[in-house]
Image (cartoon, rainbow, N blue to C red; front, side, top):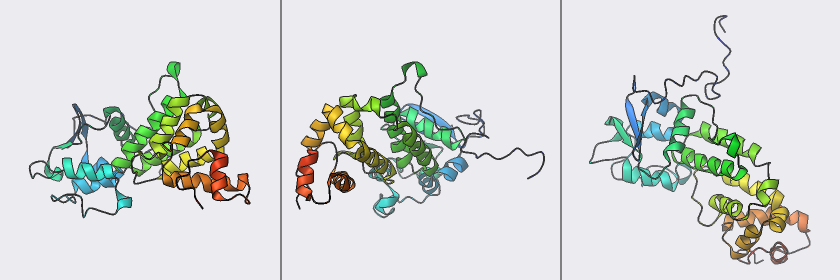
Length: 271
């Protein structure tokens, strides 16, 4: 490395970020619209950090819709929806348009966070220290991850997962948060949770629940009630809980007995 060059600490790490470049109309060649909010962006940056934008801006989406667009593991149902409903406007492809309308389903703040990450700003939820709340923090992580999954920004997802791993360790305060804590778990792992293309966040939550299950069950009424009602975990996550807890409860117990011991609904628990 040349003597006059600074040590490269990583673009995405924020060491070389220039805040003046983000959302600056100077040299911008595309505008991203989220509802009534718009962001000035650069096609080359979007293509570099997101395979979704790379495909969109290279005219690789079909006018007919997303049916032949890719395997399920490459796109979430949200991405399929946006391809079908928003990529093509009156036959004009996004790749040739100066404005890319992303619709109004996203929070502009979450899209802005992802774009700032693409421009080199370190990922960091916007929660003032004076009002810090562990649930607020995890809720922001989940919202940000959903957007990063929707627009396929791998480096953003990696940054969020690292933050979740760190912040989820502050669990003692979560056990007593009842409704919000249970709702957060169901949002990621429940029967109504979105189908993420990258399931890493679900896996992190499942590991957390498995390790902390007994404390959650004893300390959090909403957790108990949701487990019994079958609204906390979908069938896949429920099976993972049973597998991970089976050794702790004794290999001699059959699956039905484990369900009763854990107060897990019988759905999916029969031998």
